[in-house]
Length: 251
Ligand code: HEM
Image (cartoon, rainbow, N blue to C red; front, top):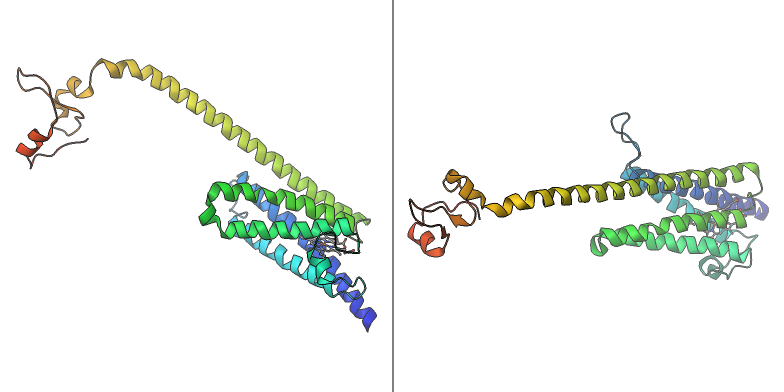
């Protein structure tokens, strides 16, 4: 009976760990695809969206929980709570297991930062969310180093495929950010040139003096147009008080 239980717990730990890793990869890929705006809604429906990203993250968290629980109850390895929760306390492959524990804590911290997003602001949340890449790296090293399946071709294909997918999407994301920065700089330069071209015309004469009807249409800005033969007078309180029902125009 104890051998069957031992097999069950160890297999659940292995399957749970590998499933959690696959789901983590998919969640990271969905997040990167979203931020790199990789999909074209004109060509296919928006399959990769925030809900999918959140759902994959939640599923990955559930499988990490199952993985840790199975490791803890497994009678063969005989892990205590301290070995499951404290990095380097494990008697079984301590460094590699410590990387998994650090990944778990990092995941909890990122989850809390998402819950606190309305308080910490988008900028800080984004900075903290970047730590997901560190989490992914830690989980990869942990799986490769502590897993009993790491030598098999299919496990190596899983790690290799995950690293390739995340690496490729990260590269695309960096390209998108670089292009956006270049476009912003070009736009700013064009605006500055246009502003420099416009400035001399603006200093020549105020617009309302060039367009005599502007005051009546409510587009005059600072100076009341001169009366017949008179001089221009600044729009001031006494004039406004003497004609309270007069529309004041745009300020
Ligand atoms: C983000 C969190 C974690 C992920 C994604 C993860 C993933 C994995 C993966 C993919 C494996 C390899 C399984 C195999 O080769 O069969 C593994 C193994 C293992 N993990 Fe984790 N793990 C995480 C956290 C933890 C934590 C917190 C512990 C705490 C003790 C832990 C303990 C172990 C142990 C003991 C093994 C060896 C199991 C075996 O030989 O198959 N892991 N983990």
